[in-house]
Length: 463
Image (tube, rainbow, N blue to C red; front, side, top):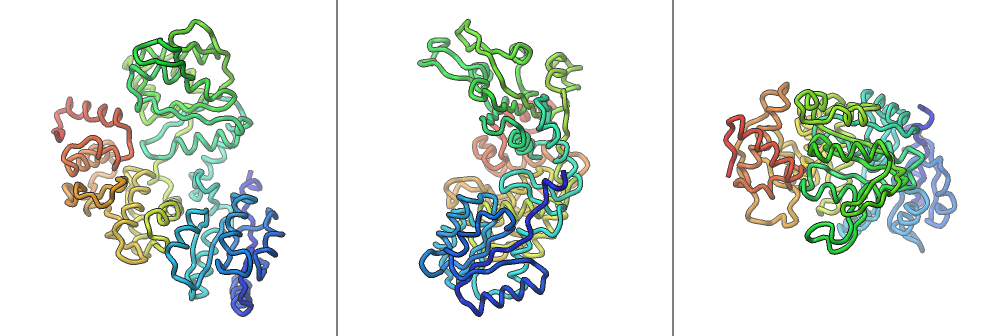
């Protein structure tokens, strides 16, 4: 297994300025980093298919073909190869184009040798403990995560039904997609469905499909998610929210490996791998009669707990860097970096909202930072204001601007943390459910369910 996760260690360096090319090469040599250097994109293109390259570092302005041309060709030939682009021209438009085109980082000349090595090492870990598995896959730096990845990889080679459990925002769908991509079904569809995000009246038709005229509004036949996942993998996310009567129908589909569309008596044979995910304790729901026992045992063949972010702290900064790369170009901050103070705040925060909260924090930091460096206050964690970060109109005057709650004080009580956080956001947006779910990153149905529970428990819910 360790051999499969080994990362190449060689740098492919392209710089047409001979003196600078030699200086960069000497800097890499002093750090004992293996490299090969070229003066043109054409020379590099002949080498780019070699799987031994760990990072491609290229100037943007090159004779004939540019660094952007090289970037696009590299993405076509080696989509997994990190590309870092350099330029002496502070052209924000070019930087945004480069990052949107798939560049992983951007160095503005002149830069120091330390800055150059820091960026290179970011994408060229020195050992397997720093392995980032994929640009959009799971991050596995922490020992806990690496052990989890090994188990995921092992079960991926089978067709066993997997039940992924873990707190909201911990990355269950990312892990499910990893299982699919490491399986023999990888070339077929991966179809996730959030069972809590679809109204109960439509969930059956969404899962199993329907025929024309099966119900009011069914103006044409529609394939269900199971059919769409044929020969691939379906993820039943938040399966604990599924109504009992539909659980019985799902159990029959899983047992018989066939499905009938709503309004039809024709059976369709299925060859689909089933993954399920939940942030609830299904065994407790079974004991309360809220979840079918037979269905629970059907999906609980291989249970895997996804640990919360606070239990895999070595993953925090690599995840933060990934989100920074993902959003800074589209948010007009192509050169933004996390200050050391911000990095320390990220390391120490309890992360009750897990990876989703971290993603939101990075987006807030990009929105609020005044310069290149994202400072601790820009992240708006603890007792600083919580700004919405997912509106399409970032200049909207309707955005909340005042904090209404203090820091998370009871780190051991995750449910209380979740409740305080959600109610705090609701109060900031004046009770607007639509704005709250945009900020929180949860479904409307999940929010309604939680608010109903808390109202029944006597908590005041903002109107």
